[in-house]
Image (cartoon, rainbow, N blue to C red; front, side):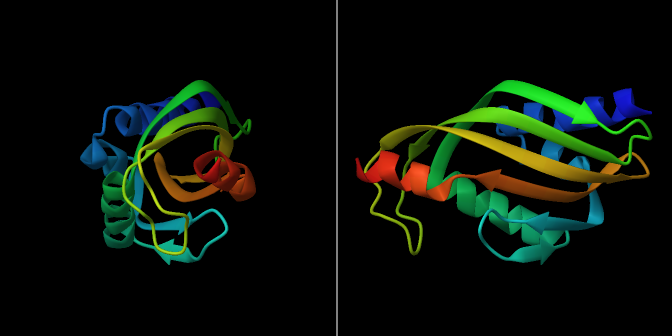
Amino acid sequence: MSNSTTDLIRRYYAAFNAGNWNGMLDCLTDDVVHDINQGKRETGKPAFRAFLAHMERCYREQLRDMVVMASDDGTRGSAEFVVHGEYLVTDEGLPPANGQKYILPAGAFFDIRAGQIARVTNYYNLPDWTAQVVG
């Protein structure tokens, strides 16, 4: 069971790196819970789709050095990776964007239900990101 969980998470992130938002959404339950780093909790695929559109507008990112883990029963998973990004358009409440590049360690935690991601919780160090883009 844990192999199918790690495969699902890898497929989700492969879609992310390819800019394949529909591929990412295909990995999610309709009622997916998304905990945004240092932000609010959103529920459902429409909210996740809107989040992806926002991210695509403001950032260009690739995730590298991916390590994926899963619980023995396959109901929980996690991923650790390094975000290599570029800040394209100023995001509300954050410093002005002018194409700054950043490299940021990050991670995510997942709940898995019926072979799909039912929750994704993302974590990264926002002060580290801010220091890199204000630099």
